[in-house]
Amino acid sequence: MKSYQQLYINGQWQSPVQGRLFETVDPSDESVIAQVAAATAEDVDVAVRAARHAFDQGPWPQLSGRERGAVLRRIADGIRERQQALAELEVRDNGKPLPEALWDIEDTAGCFDFYADLAERLDEQREQPVALADERFSSVARKEPVGVAGAIIPWNFPMLMASWKVAPALAAGCCMVLKPSEVTPLTALELADIAHQAGLPAGVLNVVTGLGPDAGAPLSEHPGIDKLAFTGSVPTGSRIMQAAARDIRNVSLELGGKSPFIVFDDADIEAAVEWIMFGIFWNKGEVCSATSRVLVQQGLYDTLMSRLLEETRKITIGNGMQDGVLMGPLVNQAQYQKVTAAIARGTEEGARLITGGRRPEHCDRGYYLEPTIFVDVPVESSVWQEEIFGPVVCIRTFGDEAEAVQLANASRFGLAGAVMSRDLERCDRVARQLRAGIVWINCSQPTFTEAPWGGYKQSGIGRELGEWGLNNYLETKQITRFDSAEPWGWYIK
Image 1 (cartoon, one colour):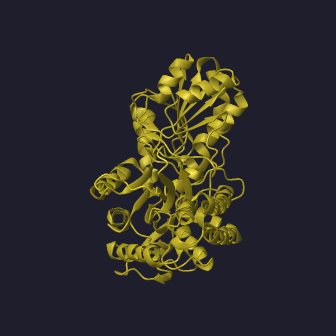
Image 2 (image 1 turned 45 degrees about the vertical axis):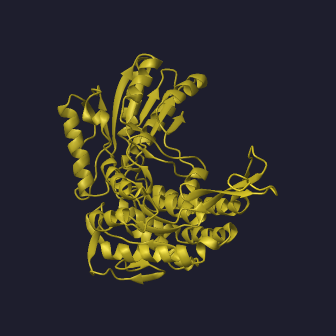
Image 3 (image 1 turned 120 degrees about the horizontal axis):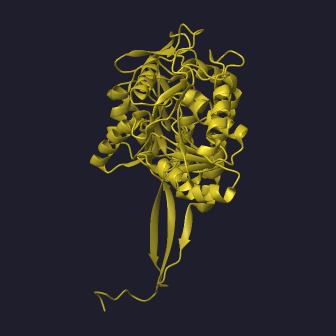
C-alpha cells in the first residue's frame, strides 16, 4: 500500500465518513510517516454492519475448516512475501530494531499457519458425542463460531497482536472488525490488503484506524458485536468490561503486568544476566509480560549485579534500521514522558538508580532512553508495584524460597513470572506457587503460538494462542435427541 488515508470495510477501501485524518510519527526522529484515516462512530457502524452481514448471510461461516484454512495459509504466504517491507514499516512506526521486527513478522505468518491447521481440525472435532446416563436420548456438543468479533490491539507488537486475534477468529468462522492502535496503525492496513489479495470474502475482516475515543469506544459499545477481544491497559480494559456488562457481551482481556523474575544463588550467572536483560530490555521494555521486578538471592547479588551493570552499559541504542542496534526509541512522546516520570518518582520514593534513566548523549532527536536499573527498591513504591512499560528494571534481594514467592506474588498483576536455578525440582515447586498465567523456568519471554497466553488477577480474563485462542471465538451448543420408540408419558398416558 502507498496511501493509508482509507479504511478497509466490506472488501473495499473507503474514505472515513467525516474525512478526518491523523498523523503517525517515526519515534526515531519525530518525523511524520503518514496521514492515516481517522474513523469515527459512523465508520465503525458501517464496518460492524458489514461484518454482521458477512456472518449472517455470507459464505465464510458455512465453509469447511479446510476451506477457511486454505485462505489463512494464503494470508501467511502473503505476509512472508512482504516480510522485509512489513518489518521496516514496523521499525518506522514503532521504533523497534529491525531484527526484532523481522522476528515479529515471521511469528505473525506462523500464527496464521497454526490456526489454518486448527481450522482444518475443526472439521473432525466440530461435533463430539456426549455420553448420557439415560439411553433414551443421544446428544452431541457442537462448536460454532461466536459471531461478529471486535478486536482492539496495542502498539507494542502491532502486526503480531493483530494475528493473535484475527487468525483464530477467522479459523473459527467469525467475522471481525479490527481497530489497531492509533500510534502504530500501518501494518494493520497492510494486513487488510494481504487478506484481500488472499481471497478473503468481503466483510469478513474490516480494519478501522482511528483514535481510541472516536473509534475504539464505539466498537467496544456497538450492539452488533458478539465478542470483544482487547489487549492494552487496565483502565481501558475496565471500561470495556463496563460497556460489555450492559449487553452481557463475551470479552477477553490481556492487560498489564509487573512480572517477577526470581534468581536463586545457584543459578548460572551468565545465563541469569542474559535472561534478565532479555526480560526487560527486549522491545525497549514495551512488553506486557516484561519481568521488571527481579528478586536475587543474597548470596549471588553482588556478583550478578556487577555483570548485569557491565552488560547493560554495552547495549547499543539508536535508530532501529541501523546495524548492531539493540534498543530503539520508545514508541512516542507520551510514552517517553510517562516512563521518565516514573523514573523520577522511583528516585523520590527511595529506590536507588544505578544506571540509565536519561536520554543517550548521541540521540538529540527521537524518544530514546537508556536502559535503567533501580536497586534497593521499596516494595510499596510505585516503580515496584506499577507497570512502567519501558526499559526499567527494579531489583531487590531475598533470603529464602518462601520470601521470594511472597514478594513475587505481592502484586495486583499476574501475567507472567520467571524462576532461575540449577535445581529443577525447586524451579517446578516455585513455578506452581506463582500466581501468574505464564511461568518461565531458566528463561524469560519466549512465546509460542501453540501455548496458552493470559494472566491472573488484574492482568486479564481468558487465554489467547494455542487451542485456547481458538476457543475464544467458539460457542458450544448442546443438541439432544429423544430416540426411544416409547412415549414420554408425562402428560399423556
